[in-house]
Length: 280
Ligand code: GLU
Image 1 (tube, protein in one colour):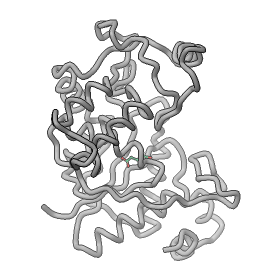
Image 2 (cartoon, rainbow, N blue to C red):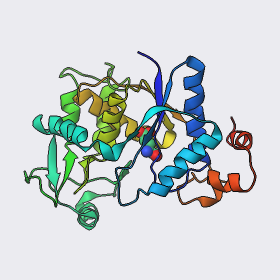
Image 3 (tube, rainbow, N blue to C red):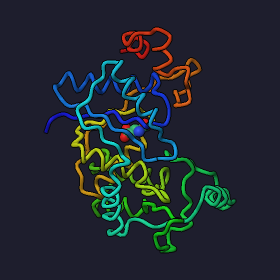
Image 4 (tube, rainbow, N blue to C red):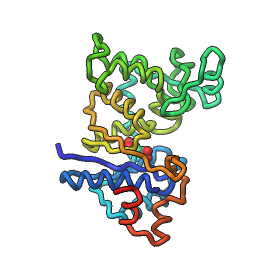
């Protein structure tokens, strides 16, 4: 199988130095080994995706000298494929419908008996209010993964702390997923699949062999490997790279226009200057 990696930005703001680092790194590796570099547009959240930001992604990458193999994969065009993946998890009894909104979750999670509120890669851990209610799917519900069931299903019955399968030491990873990640959302209300399910299916569809992504997604990767195991998909090799930070040590965010590639470009910087700024 040919080495294939990808860069997957969301078109919800300008690309900044952190994106430049991620894209150039993955592109360079693909070039070096004679592999493929793909571009995916992560536009699941249509309320935040904008055509002009998508156009700017193409412009910025072209300017940086990062080129990709066609076609560009746009998540908004693959709803049926995600629905099918979700159905496979649903038919294994690993999902449930949840009608809680953010305020319900906040209230349930802050109840005194819940102890110290916990946060995972998707924000506040879901306290499980709807887990056993068997609600039917509707426009007012989202679909969650029952993490505890999912971990038990993905792991062989005789697993122990020394056997290795899921992430090297899978019993510990399963414990961590249950206690620190919880019942993640697989499909949002009135939307196609949520991030975790979509990216796992996307990487399979595009035959991605190596995912090169920021260290901020390290915990999310555990969810992705679990989903691959449940869906019987091959896991790519994951590499988590360092994050580019601002002068105060904070990770760059989409709204950080001051470090947008386009700002540097308009100020007369060259692609080589950008590479130097991110240490490449
Ligand atoms: N779209 C994601 C982001 O911008 C990256 C997705 C991935 O690496 O799978 O953080």
